[in-house]
Amino acid sequence: MQYIIKRSKRRTIALEINSSGQIIVRSPFRISDSFIDQLVQKKKQWILNKIKLINKRILKKVIKRFGEGECFLFLGKKYKLRINQKQKEKIVLNTEICLKEKDKLKIKENILNWYKKEALMYFSKRIKFLASKYDFKYNNIAISNAKKRLGVCNQYNDIRINWRLILSPIEVIDYVIIHELVHTKIKNHSKNYWNSVNLILPNYKKMEKWLKDNREEVFFND
Image (cartoon, rainbow, N blue to C red; front, side, top):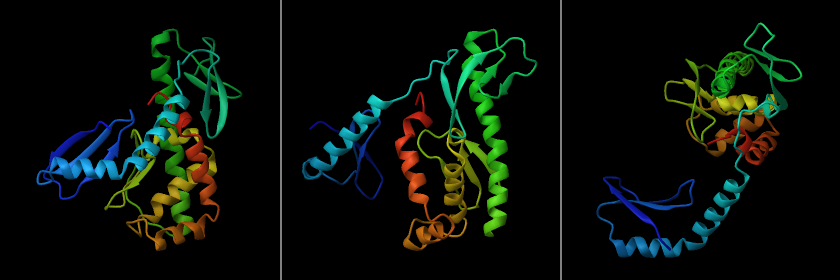
């Protein structure tokens, strides 16, 4: 089983399987090659299971071409992309996503910018509403462009939500927001933390399942 060793001043050893299925061992300088090899062999089944899961994700990977007639998610619903040079606004959302753009090379840029703009407006309103409803205090709100994480709350209670979440149903968006708002009070994923989430959203596991089942669609082209 082939793997790459990356040594640094870190204190602990860690196994990582990247998005391409490559095995990476992050190790302190003091750890010997033989110890690392034993560890990899010991974790062989775990590694194989992870690689199998990654391969499944690769097969399900969604690549958007940003062509007319292609479907895009917005708030959990699918809309076909239409090019309409007659409309006044740049983008109009009705039964379809209608875009006014002559340059085909700029279609992707326009769609992504529209997503990000809508995400910031919608997330800001929902965070404000849910924080007020459930008595949470936060500082700043921003959208992120992370490749994996959908939300984060830092030590200063600044909340960042991935713009891609705007593709998800409203109840799923609320779950991610509640997930981060609870972190303003509990900075870990302890039993107490999940109990707090459960008090607000007793069906939160349903939202987690949606995100797991639709991850490739939400993180298209990544």
